[in-house]
Length: 460
Image (cartoon, rainbow, N blue to C red; front, top):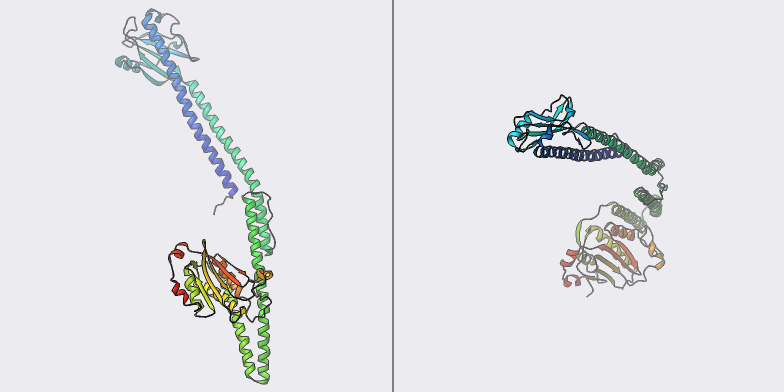
């Protein structure tokens, strides 16, 4: 785990990045400037040598005249020596005094080869740049010799040194400025995060999901994070309330059969068993078993992982009809990614609901069809159906509506939990309940089921 905070790491990264960028740019500029300055100096040395060579060819007598070789070189004094073909000194700049340019060996090589050459040397501890060019073999004392032109490189080195110092100082200043700017920006950006962390710690301490994190009022990453976390807290609060309601409703539902069971057992202890008492005990026990089973089923549905099996809905509903003459199956081949046992239980609950609330001699239509990329399983009876005002509550836990039912009140809630676990939904229109699920495209189109396979489960 890093010892540095995100802010510190960002500041260090910004400073190093800016420092590296400025230093890289400075190196490139230094190379370009040095190349330009040296090229400019070499061009000046070459021009001065050409001028001396022209003077040696046109007026050789003037080479030895005082001041004939004195001429500034781009603002810098240039030192010139003229040598004969044997390397002996013929003329020189007055500025040299008693000094001699360190170019004897280079001059002999140029005189022998006839090709000019540049070289770097030192004189009196200072760097100089030398250019030696051969002279034409025409006339005069320097005929066939060479001209040596030299200029100090001190100004060039001073310029490059100043440039390098400036680059280093600029890099350090830019890095410091960038680090300060990043630190300031991140300080302001992290201020809302610190408030969110403080509020989240307070929520964790109080264990109160009804509290919310402070909104930033800005549509940025932190603002969207706060909104998302508040939505998550809202979902947790609703889940907690749903759990509380489930416990309260389950306690209420269990109280009635347990009270009846307790009374019947007390009667049994005092008066002994009778056929009617045994029947009541059996009914109370069956009711408790159904209620416990439904509670376990809905808990498993809400906590189960997403399903991964391939389920052919047309075959599933055909098997659920079970040869019941009241059930008419109309199913086209549709496959879904699902949990076969859970889907079977959900559709069975809808069938049981239709048998309970539909007419005793009425037809129950069990339909499977495809609509776009959705698979629809509908169970319809010929009863009056659910009142439109109660459709929003039909799938709530322990809701029984106006009917006098003996069930647990969890059947439709289990259907909704199963549909939602499969990425779908369930809805009701009158007396027709429909489960809508995502369909598998390829399997739904290719896994055809003969109509004769389904007609066996319908009405004759």
